[in-house]
Amino acid sequence: MSKPAPPVSKVAVSKVAALILLAFAGSPLASAERPPGYADLADLTLAAPVIVRGTIEKTSRLNAKAAPGLAAGKARLLVTARLEAALVAPGALPARLQWLWDAPLDARGKPPKVQKMTVLAWLNAPGADGATRLVSRLAQQPWDAGLESRVRAIAIEARSGKIPVVTSVSNGFRAEGTVPGESESQFFLTAKDGRPLTLVVENRPGEARRVIVSRAEIIDESAERVRPETLLWYRLACVLPAELPSTAGGDDPALAADWQAALLSLGPCGRTP
Image 1 (tube, rainbow, N blue to C red):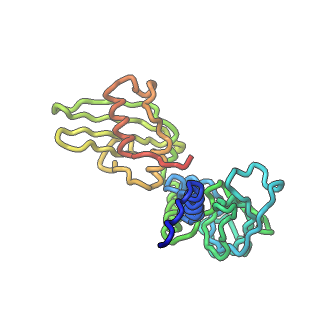
Image 2: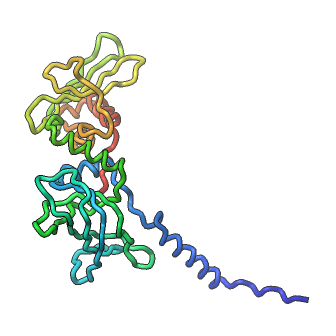
Image 3: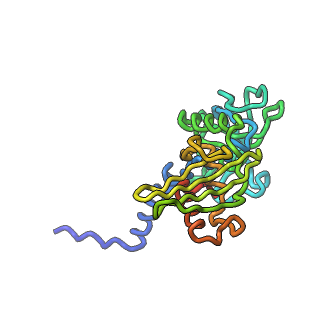
């Protein structure tokens, strides 16, 4: 008659569980950082004088003494990349570029293997030797065609000069309509180019509230809805204050409610802290 198997100790169970957790923690899914949203991409694209697609040829890890201010769970790598294409550049660029990147460590304390990986990088203007800097900690991202397309669209809109740079809301007023429940609120925004910019909230009985933007001095048919994930949306959603200032009519509850409706229609900025 065979002997019964000995009971499994709590220590053994704990060791097995720890090994499972360690294996999961080292998976790409567990170590991946959140990809940038539209607001992050706009921040990067507006800040960077140079945006490139490049293939990483090699990386060298700096020691702790050569990496001051390095956050926990990161390794500072010197990246050497071969230039594949320039999305934005003030002039000719070297064939190879170098920058520092704070890479996430896996559960074993190892940085990711990124040799031969194609990336998008948002950079300061490089020197003749190709040495440069990322414009922020998010400024190196794995390349894909969709990401490059979004970045190109932001760069084109930004360089067109047609999208106002919104700075604040200066005033607002609300007018009741001729039909009960009908009203219109107008919020006058200030922009760097000095041209008029008005955010309009229209309330009609039995209809969804309509939020539009006009650049004309008189609100007419040229006013249009703000499309999500456009530069105009970014310059409104990421700048306008969460509460209507009292100097702009915020003490009027109905006007303040329409301001909140306008912000709700735009949606949150979604910028990475």
